[in-house]
Length: 355
Ligand SMILES: [Zn+2]
Image (cartoon, rainbow, N blue to C red; front, side):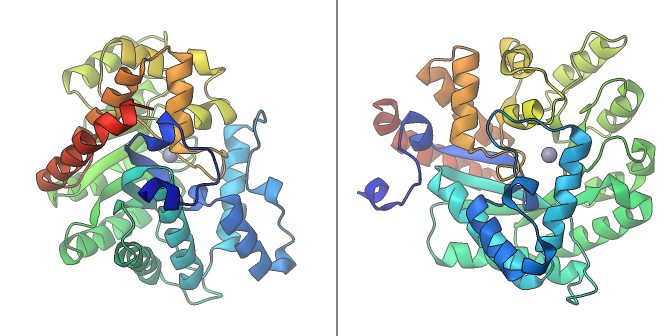
């Protein structure tokens, strides 16, 4: 009954029915074309078009071009009202796609034109999460505060302070920090101190690392912080010198990886689906979680990412199920949330595997 009532823009299948956990989703990159249209209509003078904010099927951009797209999107999300709408829409879309637990990440942003402060930015996201909960959507949503490398160490320190404040006041909604942004900008060593401070305060760390080649020294520096999860880690297992040590380190410490297939293909850090590093990590049974990164920009859904992984690497339905079930272990929320999710998965299993 419940499924039929949901209005999904696509046909339901095993992958949409599969209960899923999304752990790597940037809020501004996750804006769908539907929501984007609403935002564009509010600011017609900017003359922004769909193709400037989304990479269609079969198309590719460089990583640099992708970061430029985010700057365009940021011009469309400048007020607390924009952020609230975007948050609610993104949550609803993930819920419609069968995501039961979502960790959204976003960099607090100040906008002088609208008077939005970093604090009201964060509050708008938290309000969106709260309103979605009141609407009884079947999805549990948390927030990771993001540090954009472009801001450098002083902004990073500010963000950690803000995260600590909200960590204490939000009852388990703000769970940790993300380090992201253009990997060619700034140096890891600039962020070690604030990240370590965050860790000491009890915040979890999800760090983008090894997204581009020849960064072994910086990667090891970030790994030495013992992050709770790794974003992408695209070149950890490359053949360059020293990368064997990185793989050993990540394996020894069992640090889970957040892997985003379409994102890496469309931003051209991975040449093709079959060469995606998911294959390597999956073959050695290392904790890996399939994620979308930016479902809006890369025009994808989490169910589609599962399907792509399954079809590319010949996974059976039962292996796909296990992949999704095991990702519950790597969420940043508490053990009680973990056991609730496991219960939900077990209840759904007979119905979903029947598909
Ligand atoms: Zn990312």
